[in-house]
Image (cartoon, helix red, strand yellow):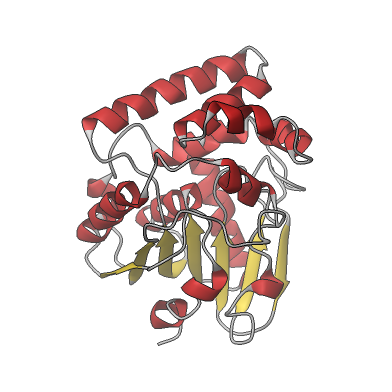
Length: 275
């Protein structure tokens, strides 16, 4: 029963972008997409974000159905490019047999060892408690801490122009947590993915390109995030994902951090979407 706000530009094979945490659908605008000239590029606001609806109670199956319905609406099967927790959603959708032809994911942050998994589970418990008690500001704070932000950065985000939007989207942090699950990559489910899959992570430079911190809420969060969650974390998760998927290609980029620089990722996408 939820409406999915989306934007389409171009023509050709449909390519759907799936955004990650605290993204409201505008960070990866079609006009900036490197495939806009050769594909029908579709961006959308996941449920509970931007102009999209949010029929409750939330269930991961409903987010998967959103993506599948969008793929059918634009002409399935579609190519899908998922970033961060949006990559986890895309992987779950592909494993569930949704109308996905080819798949690319960027820096899906699955925890890959017991220590990090325990920290993640503690974060999820504190997040759900804060949201249940209506403390959206605390939900944002615990999210920033788990991604490695300093206490100064946690305080600073309260003073940004994005703060009101972040509070609106705070409940969706629980949705991202549901997409990622409670531990390491779900290799049993990932092994069911039969479509060609590109698995990409960035290098050791976790910075956001100059001038891009104003491009959206997600980029502002990346600007304020610390470096505790480094490239090794994402690299190990990427290796595990690629090892589990039978038809996968694994790529490590030299520079970009958690917010994928379109110029760096652009040369890779045609390999999986257009060959």
